[in-house]
Image (cartoon, rainbow, N blue to C red; front, side, top):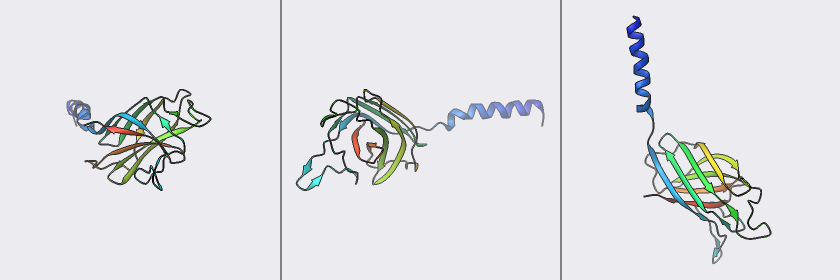
Length: 154
């Protein structure tokens, strides 16, 4: 193999890297805090996930999920909206769970900052399908109850 051929092969590898980048799968812009209300005897269960036992509010939530499973979530002021810890983060950690249909895809768990802000950057497991039918994004406690839900961006 000549030196020119080697250089061309290397350049070809670098030129093709952007082609390997994955596009957006689903986006969420805005969030809804949980209210552990009951409609009769049924709690506010979403996709089989129970709500937190106390109301939570969130000021801002945005999330991008890519077709290769990468997820980036930015949350602001996820705080207790009731109980003795009202206005605090309750010492909680959170993760994201994307549902495509009824199948869950989970992120890593990160601690809430004292003001309730959080950032999740990682890969969902298992990888979500493309397309993701009827996407639902929940922000969960480390214990598995939902604190907030994302609003799908059309």
